[in-house]
Length: 215
Image: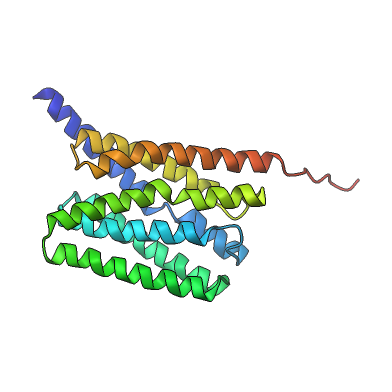
């Protein structure tokens, strides 16, 4: 009994802490885009996949009545990603790719709404696995872009670091609170992929030439 109570307290603590991290997760990347007035070096495919993941998560979280922190993270993250979607439009991405991505995202949002409206638990679980498939794969396009360009100046290291910390908290929360299976599968792989991309950031930054000051 005491062990179960301790797990509940631990899960609630890590869940609340991860909510704070997720609320601010995209701020460093959005600020970098604004400061540079550019999305050069930031993968549009990565953005589209993670946006889809958040929309899938809306249907999953609300259908299973997951804790309010989980659902609010999906809502806040979707709003931030909508703003970044506008940044891609504003600062220049291929118009066909932008329209294709927008249409797909609208369709995913409609499916998530339908799963919640119809109270369809089977569909909601599929959405949960789809969301975690997005979490498992979204960094791959960015990692490939980093490798091709041998540069990570378009990617905020704070954004990746916060994401890594949040994934660790998700792993603890899912175990302690006995969440559905989709919430237990994603975090370990997410920790691995974020660690690899963060290593890329430090590696390519260390390879940049150091400009000497004039005498």
